[in-house]
Length: 242
Image (tube, rainbow, N blue to C red; front, side):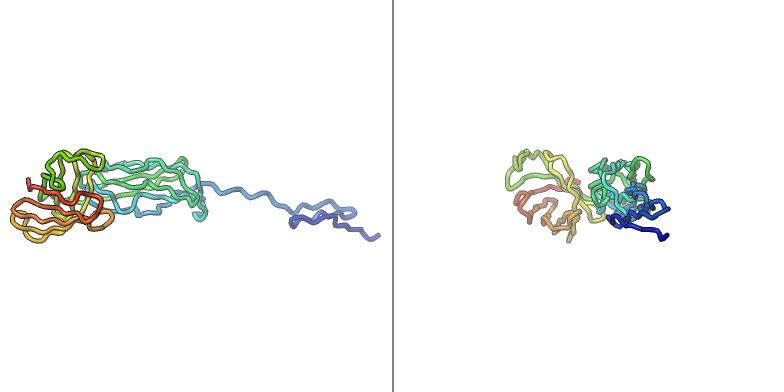
């Protein structure tokens, strides 16, 4: 007798087939497993160099991926630890985003020249080490703040009272400026035409963003700084002290 085959249903590509004298065949395989974190992959430069005390151009950043290295994994806690050089990172603990990215935000090198390292790690995963070299530089001039906007110190502005200020120039074309009362050093670069002990013209640019923010005119050790942005005071006067 000819077997009678009745197809009762087709749903999502699976057929329930009943055949006389035969058992039902299940064509569905086991459910696929979601990808899990297996690797930390550097997504910023593994090596860098910069001035001591300054931030590197590219903050330590990793991509959290599965074992294939193709699928990003979100929600993984990544720790960024300074292991040499004495510098600092902005974010010591980051959580990978939907693209699998976790970043330290920024990395400021230690004050001394030499090797700096940051290690990115996550539980159960191989770590990634970032290395930056603080390049040696030598201080060639110290300028101490005398007046701001034509006013003698102390001067109150931007919610703080300024009791002093400094411009330090180094032999590699970099500089640092800060105002006592704000508590943070702002790294810069400068160009110099002439002699600081006689007459010199200077321009100052932000070391991180690269924008020109001030010009300086130094005569016999007294430097007038005129700001070209709208954030700072119109002008300041500094005295060469070393």
